[in-house]
Length: 370
Ligand code: OSB
Ligand code: MG
Image (cartoon, rainbow, N blue to C red; front, top):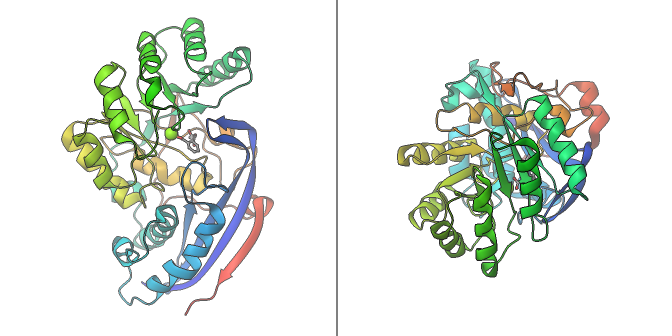
């Protein structure tokens, strides 16, 4: 396979409601899409999950575009034996920039698998045709507002609720959700690094609420404090921001810094590295689940393929399209009994529809290829 043409599209999709985490508020999802045409005449789509600002991770959208154009595409187009499986190795001379690499690898996988008539789910080793999914609930202005939102999601059938927390918005919202909806609701929390070592005793109070897990309370590079918390708390500790590769996952597990892993393909450099994390966690008996980055239908389709692997034993942050957008750029994903169907068509199994893409389009950048 050779890359013939690449267009980078920036799209902006208004969110149905603002999404607030401990690192900021988002009202729109601005995303970078990779449309890649190969010499065999197939088109592959990739989605870069980098956000506009480097606040969740160090990567950001316009930087990712620059890295893809200037550094990643040149090494890939120069290679006569290009394949999705070799892309990560070819891109290795470029340090870091995993979200940019993941987007390019996703487009290559989509193109290659479309040509072969194989779905990404089948290629990765999926064992399910649909997966139970959860919803990530942002920080709200009041407990009433939170209860109304959670009530709506539970009514829609979501299989579990994740509450975003930060100092000042933790024990009370969790207690309010437990009191209102009972102990049977699968409930977990995500701090996006908002706490510090002085908060260990405070976080232990979360043990009263029977949570499935607590996600990333401390800084990405602070495995030690995560390990100290894990040793003192009954609630399982899960890592998100700290895990940027399969090697990170091994290190974190060895150090006792987590007992559950949130797998986000963009954060770890692609779906193939994500599968490696799945494989090693499965071998070690460590549950994994698929995280989300407010993806468009493209990233959502690919995440569903990943979440259909056998070791993804907890519901992921892969909600229905309507939880995020009034109008997605693809056909919407619809909740059916708390589950989303795993796309079964070739490649990622979906592509943008022309009208949806046009409605969201900010800019298209045709990359000149050497
Ligand atoms: O920490 O999991 C996170 C969204 C953007 C960046 C980081 C995170 C999130 C979410 C939303 O929690 C997950 C989703 O529904 O896509
Ligand atoms: Mg998270």
